[in-house]
Length: 208
Image (cartoon, rainbow, N blue to C red; front, side, top):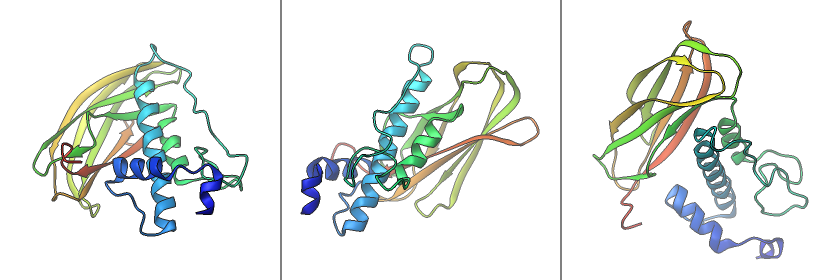
């Protein structure tokens, strides 16, 4: 209860945990704190990538909190003791100068649904890249590989944001499970240029 004196809105945090993870995560304080940091990271990553894909209509994106000025539960991604939160990693991915990004319409999918998304690459660098490819890997809730796809990203223009293809896969598992998508952008020699990853819920969006 003492956290209530440190500006903690437990109702909002429980709601965000459920929205992102499908669980309020209130079985223990440790799990609750971890869940809030993951939820914060996913929310920041989703928003930042959305705005970056809109380049040049939207640009110069920044988050309003980086570090907190007191030992409290706030929206900083670095805490008062200068330790990076889990959410810091999500923001780091979203701010890569060369960003490989997955655009998707929802986070909850029914078992057997056809998951669909779009592959985008955002290049903030002032150099053109040729002969690239993106490898997309889908994994089940146990991180077992299910499907790997490759999309040709032969020409990445300087200072650009472009869609390079569409992808789809069958949603695995049962209600209550999770599944994952990992992206890797490689150059013509197979060297890794950028990476990204996402977690999705196997759930009924109407019931939730």
